Length: 334
Image (cartoon, rainbow, N blue to C red; front, top):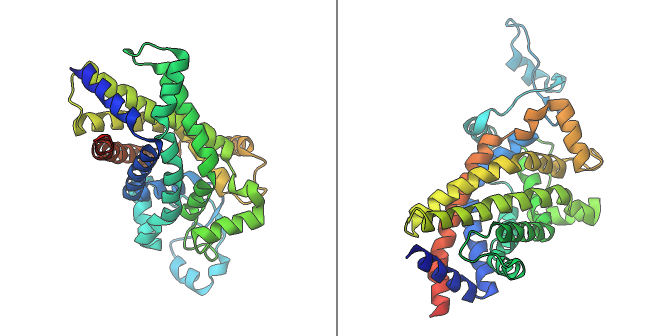
């Protein structure tokens, strides 16, 4: 019965039109992004921490009133390395206390634009591309078809980045900007696109595209392929019903896998896209200098919020996507 149910589900997915698939995937991703965006902001802040010295108070003797000195002469504060954010909860608390709760949603507009472009392609076209590769590789349809799924995940993940990269650049820069910075970097996402294009050219909008292609191709395989395979195993071998419990279990595994394999590339991508023009010669140079200056652990900065965000995002997105499929795809067939 499990195999028949899965076969029926695949038939329903294939009969849905491509625009319907794109809209369904994009809508589910936008909802997931809205729910988990504060976790993503915390991850970005932790990832760029240590990249540049933060202006903070140097250690002073106990007899000196540091707070009073700061108020009287704030320009005399020396620039020193300082760990401003500690952990997921600490980072969110610090941002909220110092900059306000709304700061956690800086770049949300660009984030939703990114999901509409990015996830619509990487997820919405996944089944179509998987079917195409399946016809080429002619893998056993009754099996897990790992090769076909991996190729489809790499293809749709890489293609999505090449289209949605400018939205990712803008999102990262909004999330990285602190309220204590000298003025706001951009007043709106539209101004951000225009300013980056004017000051940095077209290449500025696609800054970090290559590491992002690598990162998102890997994440796509870890998220979509892992979810697809785990869900099939639960349906076929564990005889779990195709309901929220199955979707939740597969989404947690997919989120964990994505976090483990993508964190190093994600940190480099974030650092490079947020860097001033000319700071790094490229993404590889950024990775080398970051490793030499901060050690291997730097590549896993923000791992906990990244894990929390990816698992939460996958759970919300996949459950939303599966429910939307039941409503939209079935209605489309009737």
